[in-house]
Amino acid sequence: MRIPDKVRARLDELPDAPGCYLMRDGRGRIIYVGKAVSLRKRVRSYFRQAALRRGSPRLRSLVNSVDDIDHVVTRSETEAILVEGRLLKEYRPRFNVSFTDDKRFLLLAADPREPLPRFAFSRIRREDGRLYFGPYASAAAARATLDFAAKTFGLRECAPRAPDAETYRRCLNDIIRYCSAPCVARVTEEEYRRRFDEACAFLRGRRPAVTDAVAAAMREASAAMDFERAAALRDTLLYLRAALRRQGVSEKSPDMRKEEALAGVRALQASLGLAGPPRVIEAFDVSNIAGAFAVAGMVCCVDGMPHRNRYRRFRIKTVRGSDDPAMMAEVVRRRFARLAVEGGAAPDLVLVDGGRTQVQAARAALAAVGAGAVPVAGLAKRREELYREAGKPPLRLPKDSAALHVLQRLRDEAHRFAVAYHHDLRGRRIRESALDEIPGVGPRIKERLLARFGSVRRIAAAGEAEIREVDGVGPRLAAAIRGALGGGGQA
Image 1 (cartoon, rainbow, N blue to C red):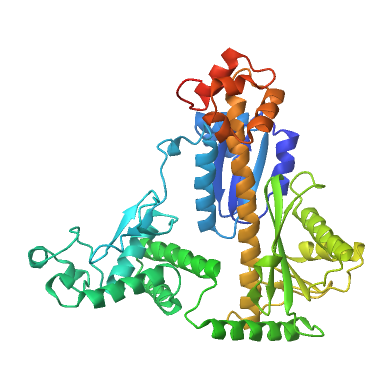
Image 2: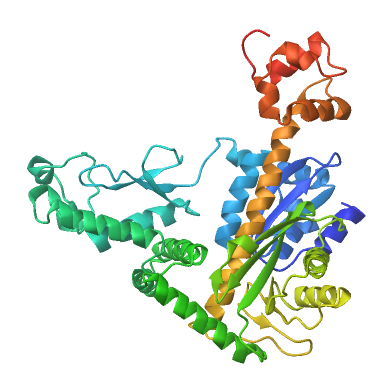
């Protein structure tokens, strides 16, 4: 089999990093989505002649249909699993037959309005007053999390809404599952509620000491060669640590958090060799899928604490294709060019999400607009290495370093902010693409419809008479548009 030149070029671009890959056919349609610990190794394995000879007809058909390959790099294998699930539900590729049942990842849910709340599994997050935690990367991780929380905090797992002595008589949880047995008043409802609240805090990542206990349990399971449980606890640990990073929370008072953040800023001065503490830091990150819906986010902290009034969003304007360093250079250049025009104060430090290449791109962009004196640093994801001046090796700060914690929180906040904007734009495009599936609606009609109504949702809510007012839309097409978008009733 001859590999098309375009595909061969894509294979050479793939990084040795976790993520998801999207295979497209000659018409640009996504026909397969997969995840990998190493994108380079996994995707290349499809195109080895020996693998194709041993593979199934379905595999050969897939490979013969591939005309292009996109990829998305993630922070971990666990994140890749979650991203894969979202992509599968969004695009529903025809070769991904194993997800045709619309399988969803497991959540943990609990109703705090119950007298003695308990956790249960759920696959759908509803607006029903319950608390939801997750999603978890695997069913085993969800079950291990529930099992650990129930044992650690003495929570019940029995089904009745209000268990009583009769429930206890038939229950083994008190004996083998470490239940605190509120049904027979072994603990009061108030004490049980306190345990439940602690379990919720643990699931939100707000109890680092308990998270350390999960790590210890994982090591014990591994030592006992119970590798299935060890893997489940590993996934649980990854989820909890991600929750802790996302929220940047601690159980300290606001004043203590501010003091800790300021200490981290002071420590950064020494770590980076700066003239003074970087009291104002602006962090940048870009988000796209193979160059599509390319955006960037900029977040800011003052004395180590978020300053949301200075957050900014950017649509990438000058870069085509998947070129993250060029995108980074564009947004840094635009940000500081505008600061120069408006006469605003420059930050004490620019932080980029990435390594040496991203730092060089940002530094060149600053120099181009006369802001070359602003220090730049990059925090790389894989090893949390800090890249500084050109020619210097990356710096590895201690994991308990206050300076590292400030940078991690800011880097992760920039990532969250950029990804949220990317998802928003992609969601709008998906909604608009519903018009592309209607026979008779070409680019011009689509443009006129959106210009007239503003969104697909408003088109769906409009009557046929209103839709017919759009230039080029006759009675038959108006009826087709109403029917395709789920409109009901008479015009």
